[in-house]
Length: 427
Ligand code: SF4
Ligand code: SF4
Image (cartoon, rainbow, N blue to C red; front, side, top):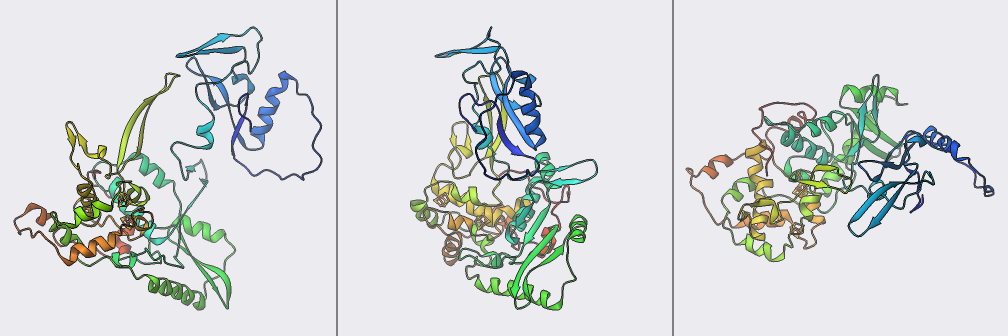
């Protein structure tokens, strides 16, 4: 890969290529210009997606090409302060220009990173990268499923991605000190919501995986693998792993926190935590259930306009900005909004907790703010008692953390249940 003068940016290999021995460097050779397309064809034949400069909206920009005929042959550019012009070039070169409006950086450093892609083809299901998720993240997927598909207004992009995603869950074989999933009604072992679930076993019987199918697709894949029926020792080994991991979890969310937070709107702890909180947004960015987004419109010099949805955070003052100012103007009010929503009012919107106890927000907070510690402090001295007639108190209703068992929550994953949860998709 080169920099200026780069003609062909090779960013994606579609099929594995053969390795070559590192022998002597090949001597320089000459490729006739009219055979440039042979190079493109050779690269594509090896499974590369060939991205190259092309003319688009009166500028040079990078795009995927299928042949050398798409290159901006015979064009050059003239650039000055505030000026970009393309002109015909009598030299008739393939690469007679200096720089396009867009660099190749987006192909190596995507501004919006896509972590996995799966596509349904005519007669197969191609998954380029499957999810391998721990059980708390599986539960987080179920929570977001309710957010994006549980209400009357569905998110089509989420639906498409979810429908094309294969999930391989992996039993947690070790808990972090920040984990508290067990006090949120979950556990180290996935119970539902996956296509395949793995539990890694390493004992006197050997190093192996207990593999369970959670869907028809998972069963089909499992049937193709060189497996044997699981023995009793395998099942018992998996149970030992689950028990051992569960025993490592010592952090806990205090019981009844949803109701406590309802009654603690004016608790002085909000101001105390705001003294430490940097409003850096880390906790929301690492959280597997946070779903706040912002919409941005952009244009570039080639005349292309885009509307993008990007992650946002309720810890920013802009997130709650309405004409005239922010609804959550102080850090204290933003922290209160985030935590109360996660642990309490999320039930009103989506019928479940917004926290699965993964502990990421604890681990990644630069101020070491601990959601379980904050909850315990507030629970120890709730300040504001709302009356039964208070509409906020009514909405709490003493809801359990997860209605029904975690299994019942996870059953909803991958299925649309219109109207089941009156979520409006807002934070
Ligand atoms: S609030 Fe914290 S512990 Fe709960 S799901 Fe989000 S990141 Fe995990
Ligand atoms: S990660 Fe910590 S410091 Fe940053 S916004 Fe969240 S609570 Fe505040």
